[in-house]
Length: 241
Length: 241
DNA sequence: CGGGGGTTTGAGTGAGCTCAACTATCGTGG
DNA sequence: CCACGATAGTTGAGCTCACTCAAACCCCCG
Image (cartoon, rainbow over all chains, first blue to last red; front, top):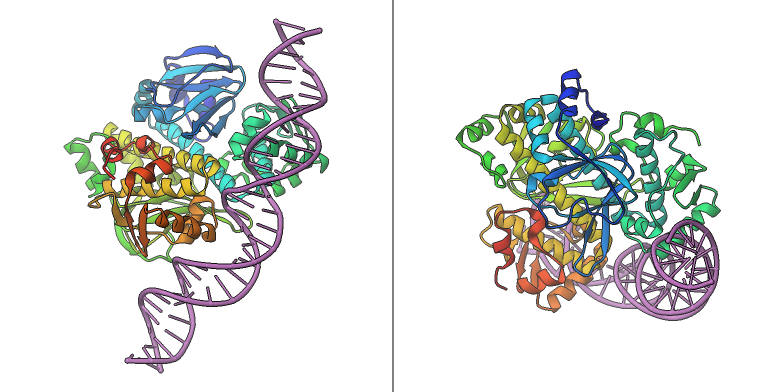
C-alpha cells in the first residue's frame, strides 16, 4: 500500500520494508477538514490511501486557484515540510483516507536508502511536471481545451491508481472546483460541459464520469500523456475510443 | 560560486567542498541555443552563473507558455534529469554563462551528503512554490496584477542573486516574452505597461527596469514574498518605496 | 416538506484578443 | 557614414470569449 508511491522507479525488498516501517498515523477526513493550511508549519506529509485531495492558493481578494488534485497513492505535500511553512491549503475533495507521515522520517529514510531518495525525488519531479502542464493549460488553452485536458489527465491518473478503466471513473469535483482548477467561472464550466455532452464526448453526472470518445477528448484537449511520466502512459494514450 | 545554490539551507565546509568538486563544464550561450529541448533526454543540470534563462512549454498549436525565469545562481532543470526526458524547453533569455553538471553527479553528491540532499530538495521545493504562484497569477489575476506581480518577483530574486538593489535592475524580457509568461498577448502587455508608467509606478526601457513606487507595485500586484522562500524576503518586502 | 448545495439558464458587459499598420532602435555591412 | 534589415515596441479598430449578476431549478438529505 505505502509502496504504491514508487511506481515510477524501482524499489527492492529492502527499500520497501523501509518504507512500510515508516511511522504513520492513518486518519479518515471529511471535506471540511484541513490537511495543511497556508502559512502554517507543515511537519507531516500525507499519503493518500483513498478518496481525493486538492491543494489550492488564494489571492488577496479571495479568488481560489486549485494547484493540484491528488488520487489514491499520491504523496501530497511533502515539499512543504522541507521549507518550513506551507504555501497553500490542502483539503479533501471528498471523504478521504490518509496516512500522515512525519517529514523528518521521510527525509531520514531517503538519507538511508538511495532508492527511496530517488523514488521521492522522482515523485516530486512528476508532480512539478504536472503543475507546469496546468500552467500551460491555464495560460494558453481555451476553456474547452482546458476542461478536456483535465478530464484526460484525471482519467489516466485514476486508472493507474487502481480504477478499473480510464474511460469510466469517479469524478470528484463540483463544477465550481473544476472552474477554480482551470481558471474559469463555474457558469462557463457548466456551459462548456454541456457542449461536450452535446457533442457526444462524455457523460458526466454527479460524481461519475464516462468518456464516450476518448480520442476526440484527447485531441480536443491537446492532451499528450508524456508529462505525467507514467509507465503506462503510452499504452493508455493509445486506448481505443 | 557553485555554492550560491544553497542559500536556503545551511551547508558546512565539507558540503561546500563536495559541491565545488562536482564535475562541470562552463559554457557561454547565446539566445538561440538550447539548454534542453522537450522530449529529449536530459542528462545535465545547468547552474546559471550569469545572465538569464527561461523554461517554456508549447501547446499543440504552437502557443508558448513560459514556466519559469531564472536568475544568476539558480539551478535549472535538475528535476528532468531524474525523469529521463525533458518536459519543456530551456533557452537563454539573454547571453548567459552556465555550468553544466551531470545529473548523476548531483544525485551521487546528494547520496553522500545529507546537507547537499536537503539543499537540493529545498531548491526544488522553492522552484515548485514559484511555479504554483505563477499558476495562481495566470489563473486568477488580471493583466495588471500579473505584470506587477512578476516585476516584484524578479526584483527580489535578482536582488538576492547579487544585484545592488531591487528597485533598479536588469530587465531581461521582451514584451512578447512577458506576455508568454503571464498568459497575455504582447499587445495587451504593451498597453498595460503604458498604464503602469503613466501611473508613475515604474520606468521600463530596453533591458532596464526602475521601480518608482515599490509599495504600490507590490499592492497592485497582490505580491507577498513568502512563496519565494528567500531568507531576505521579509526585509525586502518592507523596503521603502 | 423545507432547506441547501450544486447545476442550469438568460441577458448584458467587458477585459483582453486579433489583425494590421506604423515607428523606433540598433547592429551590420557596403 | 549611411542604407538596410531585423527586432522590438506602439497604436487603432473591431470582435469575442469568458465574465457578472441574477434568477430558477434540481435533488438529496434531514
